[in-house]
Every structure is written in C-alpha cells, then in structure tokens.
Length: 164
Image: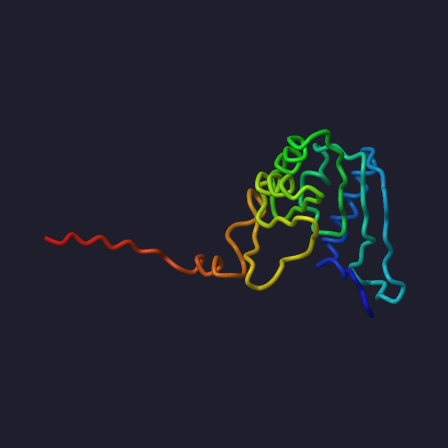
C-alpha cells in the first residue's frame, strides 16, 4: 500500500470530523474538491476523504477550531491585512502556510501570523527533528523536538555574586 494519507487516530475522531463536516455543509459550506480513500484499506479503518471547502465563514466551527483531519478551508481575502486577520482571528495557532511569488510579502505575512510553525510556499508536517514543533494560543503549550523541548525539563537558576 502506498498511501499519501493515513487514517485519523480513532473512531471518535473520525466521528468528530464527519460531524463537523455535516454541520459545515448544513451551514452553507461547499465542497470545492474531494479526494478518495484507497479501495484496499480496511473498511473498519478510520479513513476520511480529504476535502477542500469554501463558502465558510470565520465564525464557522470548521474554520475556527482544530479539525485534526484531512480538511482544508479556503477563505478569500481582499488585502494583506485581511489575510493576516483571518488566521489570527481564531483561538488556535498550530501550523499555517502562505504562498506568494513575492518573497518580501510572504515573509512579512508569515511573521505576523500567530502560529507555532509557519510554512512559506510549501506545507508539511513537523519538518525535521531539529525543528521545534508546537502551537500558540489554545494549540498547546511548549515545544516538542529541538533544543527548545529540553527547556520544559529544565529549571533556570540565577546566581548573583557581589565581590568586595
């Protein structure tokens, strides 16, 4: 089997994602593109078709909460300021990506979006072991991987000595 996308973590998570999708579609979200699950995966597995949604408002649950499934919401914006306001307008901030032919603009936007890990002109999970991973806001506390992860297990001590 040569899957590009594996299953979600549990039956409960699969149900949670399917319920979020149903509520989004009931609220007017449209499926812009949909992938498929490989035919030879176990029927009892926790597989969900990858989906790209549009016509989703920022107040929608699927736009403001962490889905932790193969769902992407495409939201149009009118200017750079709005492109920054949209992701910063949620309570979460794990990972984000920005694509642009203008390197200066991409860096400017990337610096202003409040997430723990930011991709420019690409997207993936985690990067290498040397790259810290973790979120901002309600997307977690601290960092995994890299030297930053060690700070969670350390206590800093300040020693001040006055010499006469």
